[in-house]
Length: 265
Image (cartoon, rainbow, N blue to C red; front, side):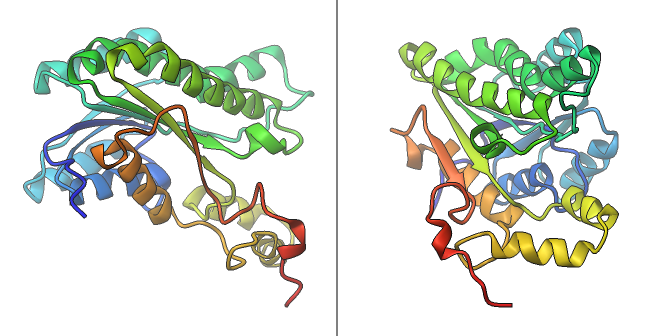
């Protein structure tokens, strides 16, 4: 299916993670579809990703940015528009489950909010004039923690709850401009960061096996490719009448009957 994304300027925050991360997978899928991936991230790894695209003849831009800093976010949008003249899609993909729980300091809690939800507001705020011109759309990457809780991560849970609230608020606020706003909700996805965490857990392989068994559909984690493929469909005009929606890409983790969980070793 042609998603009609060719030549679209798609800005993806949190897109300079390790190879195999959600953001990195999304930008590669965008390039495969002929879109122009624009990377916004604080990690200098993004320079290498953009250069690799350019060597393949794929137009791309990386703007190294502290996504919690309003001035830097405004500057990032300015640079994008200076080069391309427009913005068609914003994908907010920043997310760090930083463990800022009830024992965290005020500053740690606020830092978690700034990274995990305020950055979403900033990117959309500054990109909005250009989204209005293009009648573009917004996709927020969310987490099941917003709905289920997790324990020990008040900052991240509050932020991801805020992401869902903003998704619906923007869908209402921007409907007059023909701008859609949606969110993908992820539960257990085996990213490089997840793998790094498992390595720190005592008997990590057993823990990983238990987590996999808790996922009703096929007793396995969601892949980053599955998330990216869904993301591309939602931002495309093949999903042109979808707005204000939370799309769960998580193998039934949140809603399906626990009786479905496999007891097979």
